[in-house]
Image (cartoon, rainbow, N blue to C red):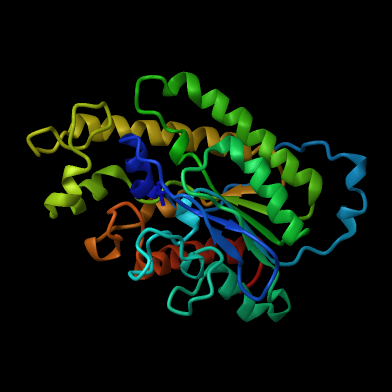
Length: 308
C-alpha cells in the first residue's frame, strides 16, 4: 500500500519508493502495464464547488463503473508470488478480478452487471498527490463517467524529515486541484478518498516478529520505529502516527469542500496486519491482505452508492 498503508506509509518514512501500475484500454478487467517499480463512517462534503459550464453535457451522463488513482496500495504490487517485483492488478482490492480478493469492482458487478468492463486503474507505485490529476485524466479517458473514483494518496507525500508541517498545505492544494479536475470532467461521479491502512504501532508489533522485516525500520530518523539496536522506539512511532493523522485531517478537510467527495471515515485505519498478509518486501499486501481491505471498504462504498 505505502504504497502502502502503514505498509506503504512506513516505507515512506524510510524513503522507500514503491512500484505500481498504469491502466490502459477498457476491457472486462482493468488493463494495466507494468512500470518501474477511526470508525468506518463516511464523511460527506459541506461546501459546493463551481462546475464549469463546459461540463453541462457530462452532467446529464449516468455514471457507470469504477476507476482508481493514487499509489501502489491500489495496484496489487507483489501479491503474485511468481511476480514479486511486479504489479498484479488482478489482485487489487479496488479494481481487481481475482475472485479470492472480491474487489470493490467485483462487489459492484454482482449488484450491477451492466458495469462489466467499465473499470480502470491508473495508480502508480511511488505516486505523489501532484500526479493525481494526470492519472485521473487518463482513467477518465477509459471510463468517462464512473460511479466511483477511488483515491489512495498521501503516503509518498509524507517526508518524516521535519518539513511535514510546511508540506501539508501544499499537499492540500494539490489534492484540491486534482479533485476539481475530476468534478469538472464528471460531476455526477462520487469520489472516495481512503485513509492510511492500519496504524504504525500495530504494524511495528507485527514486523518485530521477523528480523528481516524489522531491519527495514531500524534507524535514527524521526519516524524509524526501531532503534539501531532493534529495540522499539515508541517516541518515533508516536511521531509517525501524528504525522499520518495530520495528512489525513488535511485530506478530509479538502474532500469536505466538494459535494461529490467522501472519505472512508478512517475505515482502513482499523486494518489489523499479520505477517501472512505481507508480501516479500514487507510493505505490500498478499491476496488475503487485499481481500481484507476490500471487505473493510465495501460497506462504505455500498452506503455511499446506496447499493447492497
